[in-house]
Image (cartoon, rainbow, N blue to C red; front, side, top):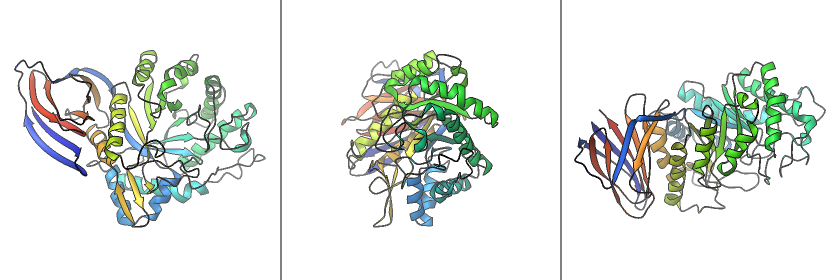
Length: 445
């Protein structure tokens, strides 16, 4: 049994090192041990992906062909990030050049003026290039930020508001019309969330649902309309918001036959760890998928220059989610400009790639190299295995891949080097986690 270690850490910039080692017979060591138990198996990983927003497509269109190819290679090549899924907003979101809807005419009940013009401008060219690079269809998750303004109690795409009861049926038809537009053009819609952040009243596109409203909309309007349109194969995800209330929301929405109609719970990271919320959902609803649908660092909360610390924050969240049942991951914008936009309300955020419009340079952010450890080494179809670790200062997750290799990802966010002894099946190897580092140990027979 051999081990190959891939180490990423900070000096003045990110450094990557590779080392090889060999497991020796277990000598009875009790201290500084990380145990791996391949016979204890948990969820299967679907894969990783990111969001194709209007903003990402807008910035992508400004880059040179060489830069575009480099970005696609980094994200979608099996030798690199191996992304295989994308998330796309229904109509505009905050990361759009402006607010828009495919049809915002109140009198147009049959959607005769429905138009994909805005989607065609920036999102579809990025999607087409990515699918051409992959030579396959990329399964899409659609998420609405707001219904058209006339359907809402506040008559505004922004500032929350509720979906008016008299428009439940029409909004369900709108969503099916939206899905049909993609499928008729040859794209693959895999899943739909009911509403992005249904508890948040935002100064950008947003809409509020109570649990009862979400339940009623799914059960009495959306699912019947999807059945009518032969769209029953599309997975429905609830919540699509932060973890701290995810469990109670899941219990409330799936308190009746709606449970049979829901594929899983989508969640975000913005309110803290709350990893146990995922375990509670899994315990209560063991057949439901747990998907992280959005994760990024807002520049209003996290310093743009604190790249190593910020990358560590996101990697910590990734490991915690993986260890508590997450089976799929969508990063937020795959690309933004140097300000963390465009964003029509100034809600600027970080992304793995930032494009410097002045110098025409494509900047790789630290989080890109941290995420690489997960997306490259945890293959689609991998199964999580059990671990124990001697210290809370190290975050650890381990996965057995379809090719029988085992990927162990170890995050050290502390300012000290930390030794560890990796132990599996009566064998062990001594290793070191450098300060402010992330390591993948790939174990093969």
